[in-house]
Structures are given as C-alpha cells and as structure tokens.
Length: 204
Image (cartoon, rainbow, N blue to C red; front, side, top):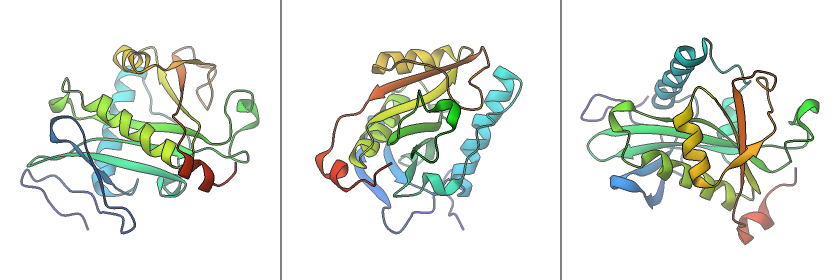
C-alpha cells in the first residue's frame, strides 16, 4: 500500500531492484521508479486520460500492459519534489519485432523506446519539469540499449509538440491505433548510444 506525503498524496511504491534513481533534476526534482499500476502512478494516468477527453473527446486507446513498463522491458518514473511528493510521470517501453503491428513495421523498429503517459501536475508547470522528465526517460532508455525514442501526441497539444521539437524530435509517420486520425502526430529522436546498455540489451 502506498504511504502518504505531508500533502496527503500517495507516494510511489518503490520497486526493490531499482528504487530512487540517483539523479536530481530541475528544482530539486528526483525520479522514483514505480509500477505503472501503482496508485501513485494511476492518479496521474487518470489525469492524462481526462485531459485527452477534454482535448480530443476520448481517451488514448493504445493497448497498454503494465508489465511492459517494468524493468527490463521498460520503465515508469514519477518525478518527486521535496515536501510535495509526486508531481509528474512518464514511461517508456521497449518495442520488439514481435510486438510491432504489421501496419507499423515500416515506421517503428525493434529497440525503439516508445514514450507514454508524460504528464506534469498543472500546479507545477512552467518550471522545466517536463524537459527534465523527458531527459531522464531518454537517458534511461539509452542506458537500456534502446536506439530511438518514439512517441505519439496530437495537434490539439501544441505545448507538447513545441516541447518535443525544442528537444530535437523530428516528425515520424503516424503509428499505432490513432495512425489514421488527422489530429494524431508522431515524433522520433535518436538516442545517445550507451555501450554497456547496448551490449547487454536483448535483441528485438
């Protein structure tokens, strides 16, 4: 069961093999590895889906298995501020040859890291937390042997598109269950190679 922070928010249940990542980002932000279906994660994931309903009239229908976001297949992070608790989330899952749908095989590649569920609590935006979170997702994916980051967003999220373009993401043909929807936009960015992660990573 999740514990409570001084603000009454649930804190993430640490995964024994990883726990807190020893890396501090903007404004004292640290990153905790959490299960995708931990209550602290679910609170943010529900907020993401509610946001999609506001902007697009429906939720993201992409199939998600929580196990895909657990090491070594992927990672789910909560950004934690001192004396506040979790304020943002995001995760990545490693794509394999067998997991890529036939319709996406000309776009997606084995060992792509698909970034999902990036979200910053509205009360803590405009502090650089989203960029710090994205940087940590990319860093951990590269260390795990992933070659590219790929993601899907939409034209009704201009702030997200601006963030990804500023980070150096370039357009990618649409993929996934929303590939034929005119509001969907996809992006990719090459990840810096990590020799150890690249050597030890499972092959597609």
